[in-house]
Image (tube, rainbow, N blue to C red; front, side):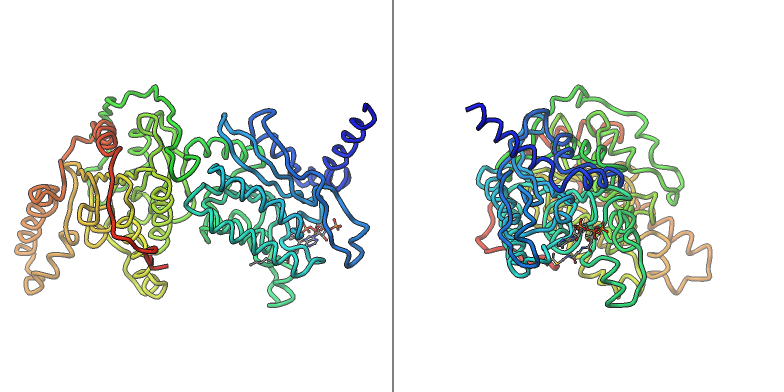
Length: 510
Ligand code: HXC
């Protein structure tokens, strides 16, 4: 018996070595951890249960029959993060560059199926070159099966992808269909085809970083939701992130009893809005003062900074925050900001996370650049996402809410449940200057008349009270009481239910 046990341990040790010590050393030299080291950090100590450690590929072409490595380039299983179950697969770059064979795909499909059946989140750690070239269509078929499962699980369980090395082909398309993608700076890349193929096909010379580093995807393309300094920091942030999420679409996110009193008032908020209406202020200050212990997990912080999206907690419960940021482009809505916020809203709505919106928006960004880029359709995504979301929706207008952007940003008219405004709010079709120049065009040149019209307009419209008189704003609140009022509103709406007519699904303007 002892022999058999030793044989098992021997086989396990071989499997644990993956592509061998030389390749492990090379992985370390690049500043990357191995698949197993990553799992150790991500999961609670000792909680990992591995599946399919001895699976190998069945390929016999291109001399592959002699090159079999147990586990076949992906480590799969389940474990816990702060005591909650997650399913996991981690690509092992030391084995054929983590590429996906038919059997490697089956291992991933098994954990995908189990995660969906048992309604727990699934996390993929990617460090891989896509479909295994030697396997041809068998690998492509394997990816197809993975993609289909990504879609079947979408909106049922959270799916999280972490890019931790050079990733190509299916190893970027599968992440692209998951809810969130995180990335490690400087050591990880995402591209459909790598720099060598780009050079061959288009003659363009580009580095991996320029083509698909975090500086591209977390800033320009918006493919990535956050990028971190190294493997360890990234994995620790994923642990923190998972704590904000429910296990599935039928459950609530875990409650973290807050030490931070919900009745807490913050007098500094009474002076957050500068006297000069054109002077910016940092909307993140408001978010941090409203949430529990200023613990905010920002999504897409480096992309479309004119809108802020992220998760915080109020009274221990996860809440999604969306806020115009006056510090960037005066908080205007453009195509990127609209897409960013729309996707965030849809995630919150899938997973029962209430949405709080802070509004200071001068409108949609005018110009050919935006119009040619499809601002109408992208803006419509945001409008559509807010209107279709059935989770509790609470908003606070802090300063400007002009034009269409007033309607779009969680207004009462598109289903906002509780709509508050600060006394500094200005709700109007546009700012006073623009408005007067249009409706009193004949008086342009007569400075006295224009000044009088401007004052009239400001007195009448540049306040929250016209909207409050109509009931579009439920109350004009003191800035210092914002946390308390939001906490009360969230409690009021906990059991919100909305009946809707049957339909297969809606048709958001993609
Ligand atoms: C088989 C692969 C492989 C692959 C890498 N390797 N990619 N083996 N199939 N797809 C192997 C290499 O041969 C090498 O083996 C080891 O992994 C490390 O690769 P390197 O090239 O030395 O590493 P690096 O220079 O860091 O470059 C990593 C890379 C590059 C950027 C990922 O390897 C690359 O471009 N690979 C091909 C990517 C690709 O085009 N894949 C197919 C996509 S199609 P040794 O033995 O030397 O260690 C696809 C279809 C899905 O995925 C459908 C999408 C809709």
